[in-house]
Image 1: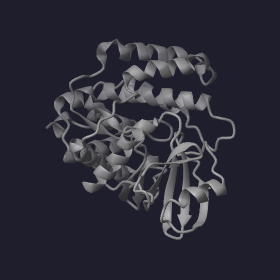
Image 2 (image 1 turned 30 degrees about the vertical axis):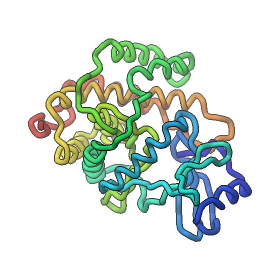
Image 3 (image 1 turned 120 degrees about the horizontal axis):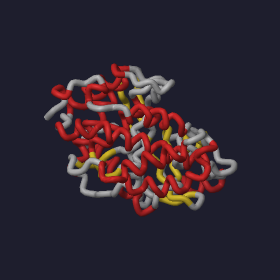
Length: 327
């Protein structure tokens, strides 16, 4: 979450007149994240999140995200629900941007995820994958392998400003992953695509909701597992925590067992996931709009995670015996 587009009081009042949400009590921007403009909205009817979609999110794709949240909630996944206006529409326009109001979920995201958090997100991810099996809509992953080279082209000329040799390092990894090694014919389905700690809420040790589905798409389910493995199972110094990985993978496997082929592919998928977030973070870091209320995330975090994943040989390097996860 972030704020790129400011909303003035007059615009907000006109926009909210189309909803049955009562009077505005407070309204403030949320600085975390990098993708869309988000605001915490407090009205006499309660608390809500107002999102203005920016950057990579095309308006034509919004029905997929909104429909997915509704579908998942109907199957027991706790996630935000879009509110409809007086015309029965979930999608509106504010400040020239597509805009949606969603319900507010209780909880906070874990700044320092522990083993219990990792197990909770593993279980929730597997349940989400199962709940999405009969979702009728489809969206391609624009940030899979074919989308990485264009990102690199946007940032390559300035990559060494962050770290000497980064341009060559990314180029070599991209050449490798584009060279026909990317796993194929693995189970497919709806993935979240961005289930980082700041997109998962907890009340104490109990997971209370999954948020931010703007990267959701159809792709390899184990790729979503790989994204979470990178996001949840490293310490702040980017050292890998085997205990967290074991808890995450074990909890996932108890809900949806990974096949032998998925396990074999996981190290390579984790390399790709690390490169994908290194690239998008690098582009975002180098292109923060002037005046935007946003805190760009450190690209070099994912450089260090990618270095680790390049050395992983099999599931045992993640602290898991293969037999414990095979379907």
